[in-house]
Image (tube, rainbow over all chains, first blue to last red; front, side, top):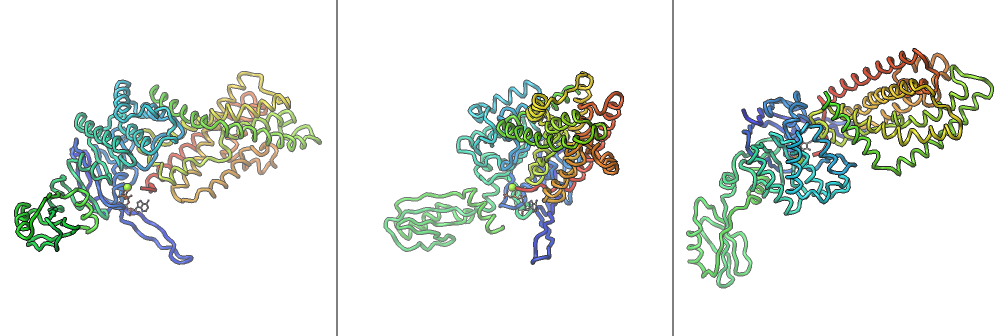
Length: 318
Length: 267
Ligand SMILES: Nc1ncnc2c1ncn2[C@@H]1O[C@H](COP(=O)(O)OP(=O)(O)OP(=O)(O)O)[C@@H](O)[C@H]1O
Ligand SMILES: [Mg+2]
């Protein structure tokens, strides 16, 4: 049985806005149009897409806090909106931009309270809490009221709160927002080990594609409420990032080289950037062709970065 | 069952601690309660210049009434509470919905924690001033104290149920302030907070007594000042229990309706 399953799921929002002085117009926003996918237990899935694509809306439907307008959803074998409370004990949820901790209380009080709300057995609670304290470096602010925490400190607390009860499935909506490089790396390690050692299924959204590349064995990209890509990082790069770039340093500055099957995208003094399709031409062939036109001093080949690939997808709406 | 009760107590403890985080606000509030107690006391006592009693209230009972209602004002949150409405409006309600416990239960337990804090730090100071400076009389019978505490517990539940209802309006409209202000006016008059319901003309008293509002203030106060006594106390408590159950069921139902059409705001 898949951990998460969606069949033709959609969510519309009805919004009323002023049209003229007295008239009001009703518009329907299709936040999610028609979404179908399933996630096997134990996978670590990255759920990405441009702003307003419908990611958060999907997570809200999967966790049972938004009723879908159409379609069928099953999470851990349950129907989220109908069995929300039952499902809640088995999943962990974190919305990076929302405060889920108790605002006026010291961080540790939130953890203690969650321990009772989720009925976490003592050993598990102690084990998890000490692991998180160490890994996420919580000790310095464990007794500080949440309202006094910095964004990154709070996020570390939120993440702990979402995972203390050993959820089967973890939904993270921008879990690394506001984290510094060290904390970001720690969070990645934490998620990887929870996934590998405890088989936790993780679905995470992030605008930091390095997170996605390092963590996720599978990437889902949505745009305007529709799934436009489903596969791993290599497939993504192969499909959308065929362009590699050869950077050559000529002996002396000259005009842009004229090469078959490649084009110069930038010239800076003696240095030229030549984009080429990696499937039709090899770097060696291109280097030889370039060297035939002008003597070369140095060269490097740039592979497509996930950032560039995804930027192209978002911009060109492939 | 026991674990479940433990959870409620733990939640209530956090409700208490949240208010304990703002001691200066509490002190200022208690001071204000006392000042208003002085004003209300002199106005209401003037009514007894020409007569001995109004309904079952004499001057002594009225003095106790004034200082006790000043103390209970915050315990039953008579002047408004819009935490839940704000949570719906900001979308923070999402946080409550992802917990394996009904959000209303969390809210009720939290509210008892809040009420306990308010009882100690906003309730005792005005009553102490009443006793020390105005010779307000406290009940002598421990059974009356017991009945009063039970009645107060039920009063908080009735008030909570009602507050939840006007907060849940947030599921349908983003402007809940209007609803709340109307609710507060009705609540403070018909609960018997402004003047005892026994001071009302009979027709108005009849209307008030057909609403849940007296169960929030008048009922526990009448027990405390000795206007309700003997077996009548049991009848009063049973009535409160009925209102508490009714209000909680109704808000539970409205909550279920609301979550079904819930639109969680904000990314
Ligand atoms: N409560 C709401 N009422 C009306 N429209 C909404 C509501 N919530 C979301 N939307 C719309 O639905 C679309 C999807 O929003 P959603 O929050 O799911 O995007 P997202 O993919 O999470 O974006 P981001 O990367 O910016 O977080 C957007 O166009 C948004 O304006
Ligand atoms: Mg979002």
